[in-house]
Length: 164
Length: 164
Length: 164
Image 1 (spheres, rainbow over the protein chains, first blue to last red):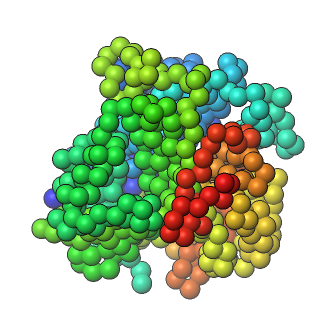
Image 2 (cartoon, each protein chain N blue to C red):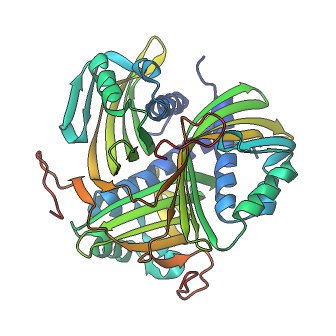
């Protein structure tokens, strides 16, 4: 019932796995994201609206849907409720808030959701076996004309503007 | 001064308690929320603007204020600063960001706050003894006519729209 | 490779250090913030757009840029990826979401970024040695006329309004 030191170690390692996943998503590091899944991982985003079997299909979807430099995203996960179910298995619930500035289309997409994930430890490293979320809400709003983009990930030194 | 393993275990268990509380709030799971408080818990939201004595009064308030299916909420807590003050007692500070889409009234309420909580361990489980937050800010904005709700917690399969 | 108990303790203590930093920033507790840095700390905000050498210069910048009671801010950090690199050294990546309501100028500034920090343990306490972030995006929007500020950090009892 009570957590053990081994549980605490597993929990911290799984947190890092998830935090790297969402960071790489916003930094568009697709090759690094691929390494976080087992080959036969499955994903079900938006309550099943977008479902994929296999790491390659998952990463291809992420790349297709978020790869554009005209999409600036901030996915933030937290509130982990992680159950270590065996020496090499675990599951977790996470809260997500996400925001995608789709500059190309002039819309912002904002949402909140809860993830339900499964993890497996392979050769000493935790990997994502199954991931998916259900939305609390998701909304789309045209970007107001008076919003100024003052900095972005593709800045190189001086201030440029993707939408300017 | 330095943390012990017992502290680390208590800290992780208290994090889970809080994360379950806010998840159940957004998922409107009132019976599960009730189990997270001791019977004589007290709450003071909004710096005392809404204060309650006893678990039943707290849960009734949450149910009354957030129960409507027309209110879609995302409460996100993080930044825990948890002090384990004894084998069965602890206190903590948390940061909150919250957003409530009040579709029924056509307004969004957004805010930021810091919680100050007290916890007590009863029969091996951490419970909320006292909770409350003070606002950094809270603001209310009429929902713009051009926002489209594209998914929500009450979706069952296809895309429906609470406000459509 | 695997985390040790000492790593877990260091990780939790470093999380608290960072959480106190951002809380004090939003609560404008400049003297407490100063205690979180070593004297020769360096900071590089906005990818180097604002760079400072020495604790005093860093804290002066924070005070100058965020000190106004007309600026209500919510900085939220999470997703820590902390590497303990020695008994007294560590580094970390963090995700930031920040929002500053600049009531005085009638604008909101919103952004997302990733921090890269270095920490050092001095006399048993972890301190910030180096901090900095790069933006995923930052945007500025004039505050809509129909937003009502319903609560704020300077409320004393009743509801007052900084912008009313």
